[in-house]
Each structure stands twice: as C-alpha cells, then as structure tokens.
Image (cartoon, rainbow, N blue to C red; front, top):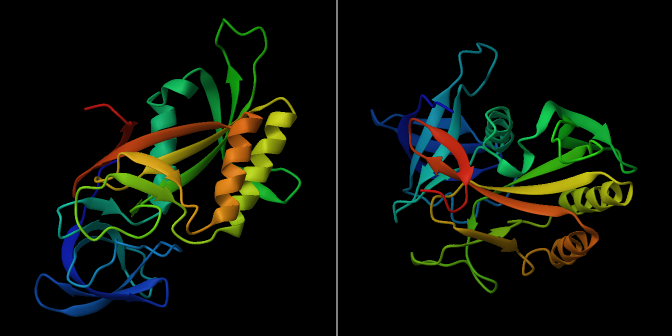
Length: 246
C-alpha cells in the first residue's frame, strides 16, 4: 500500500478522535484520529507523526493521523482502518499462505447470533486435496501495544506485543462468534496484524482485559486458528508480510 504523507510533531491527543499537532511550517492545527483504542505508547507529546490529506471538501479536519515515529525510532500505524485494507490487499495478492486457496473474498459479511460482521468471509476453496470446500471466517485485529504483563515498557528492547490495549466487549463477542462458526463446521481465523515495527510477538493482554484473554484460550482450544502477520512500514509504503520474513 502506497502512502502520501507529511510530517508533523504531536502536541496531544484528546477527545478520542482528535489530536493537536505542529506542522513543518510551524502552524498548529487539529487532525483526525481514526483509532478508538488507548494508543498507549503511540501518542507521546513530541513524537513525530505522519498524516494524510483528504480532498473531501465536507471534512472538518482534512488531515488524518497515519503513523507515529517514536523517540526510539519505531514506526507505528495508528490508523486502525488500515489493518483491514492491508489484509484485503494481502488476500488478493496471495500473501497469507494459510488462505491462498480461497477464490472469493467478501468483506463485512453479517453473521452469527450476536449481530456481528466478519471482516472477511472466504469461500470457493479450490484446493484439490480437499474433498469439500470449507468456508472461512476471518476476523482482523491490529496490534500496536508494546509492553509486558505488568506495565508498559518505557525503554526500548522489549518486542512483545499485546492485544487489546483497552477492555473490548466487542472483541469478546467476536471470539464467541468465531467459536460458534467452528462448531458449525467452518474455518474461523483470528488474524493479528502487527502495526508496530518494534513488535515481533503477540499475546493476550490479560492485565488489561482478563475476560478477553480467557476467551482467547477457549477459542484456541475450540479450533479457532490464530495467525500473526507483521507490517513493513515506511512513510511512503506499508505492506503485510509473514511475521518472520525479511
């Protein structure tokens, strides 16, 4: 995914969807933040941030916060909308090895008993080794929290990533729905997309949401597949790739 971004310096994030920044010419302005999470470690005053510009004249805030460059040099994609876009691109380009045999990709399909939408419904599996095509339900979660089980690290060197970064009733519901799909004979996949260059592993943030952590363990035991993919990030491009590829 190609990006066309400009640089600014963060003053502060507030009201969840807004942040004040200083542009390169010294102008202070407010930009939109497409992230409902806590953004712990991703929004420190003085951080360099990268933003995109919308041409939509109806938008009150034409600038959107896309990346954070931390004081340690890590790049973080804080626009959570990008996670699904990156996975859609990766599915189309057959980057996700575990899902390359599916021919039809349907985003945002309604499903389940709890009025949910799955990020991607995959069907038409033409893998000749299978006698029967098994549909797949793929839920995507973006991971940006770098830390440990007791506190958020303040020094560089810990590459453990955690999800979620705030309690997530919605995420709990998604795990229940995925388990129900397995019980009905479908494949159910939870795909963690790492959007932080300093993170190289993912686990449940039991210290933040113990209910989610317990449900994740139940989901694994029930047959929900857990995939972890990382993003290669720069200020001009971001792409999904296998966790341990170069």
